[in-house]
Image 1 (cartoon, rainbow, N blue to C red):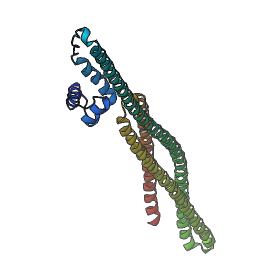
Image 2: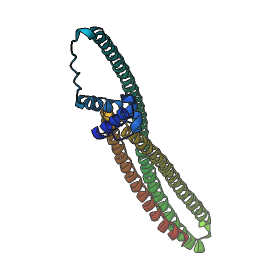
Image 3: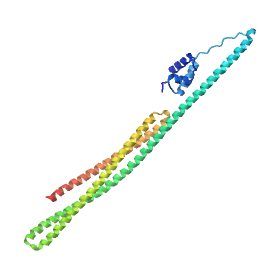
Image 4: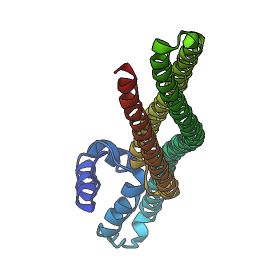
Length: 300
C-alpha cells in the first residue's frame, strides 16, 4: 500500500487540477498508485480548504446590459449546479471506496479471528491429549514399579531357594558317597533346584514385560511431542495472520497470548513427564544390573 502523506496528496491534487482532470479521492488514489480512502479523504478536504477563493468581479448594473447580466447569473447558477453535482458524485464515490475498504478490513479481521479460534481449539485439544498421556505414563510407571519390585522380590526368593538347594545338593552328594540309600534324596534336591531356577527365569521374564511397557510409554510421549510441535506451527501461522490485521484485532492478540500461555504450561507438564520416564529408566537399569551378578554367580 502506498505511503499516504499530506505533501503527496496535495501534489497529486495540484497535478490533476493542472492537467484539467477531475480531482477526487479515486483519481488521487489512482495517481498515487494506491492508498487508503479513509486517509486520502481528510487530506483532500484540507487541500481544498487551502485553495484561495477567487472573488467574483463586480458587475456594473448598466441598464443597457440587464439582459446580459441575467444571462450571466443563469450561467453562473448552472455552473454552480454542475460543480455541486460533481461534488456530490465525488462524495458518493469516496463513500463507496471507504465502504469497500472497511468491508475488506472486516473480512481480514474475521479470517484472523477464525484462524485464532482454530489454533486455540487445537492447542486445547493437544493439552487434553498430553494430560491424558501424562496420566497414562504415571499409571504405567506405577504398575512398572510394582512389577519390578515384585519381580525383584521373586528373584531374591528364588535365588535364596536355589542357593539353599545347591548347598543341600552338595551335602547330599557328599553323603551319597558313603550312603547309597540317599540317592533318591539327591534326585529330589536336584529337581527342587531345577524348579527354583525355572522360577527365577519367570521373574526375569516379568521384568522384561515391565520394560516393554516402559518402552511403549516412551513412544506415546514421543507422539505427544510431535503433536505439540504441530500445535506450535499452527500457532505461528495464526500469529503471522494476526500481524497482517489492523488495530481492530487487538482482542485477537489477547486471545493469542492466552493460547501461548496455555502452550507453555503444556510444555512444562511434558518436561515433568519426561523426567518421570528418565527416573523409571534408571530404576529398571539398576534392577537389570543387580540381576547380572546373581546370574554370573549361578553360572560359576
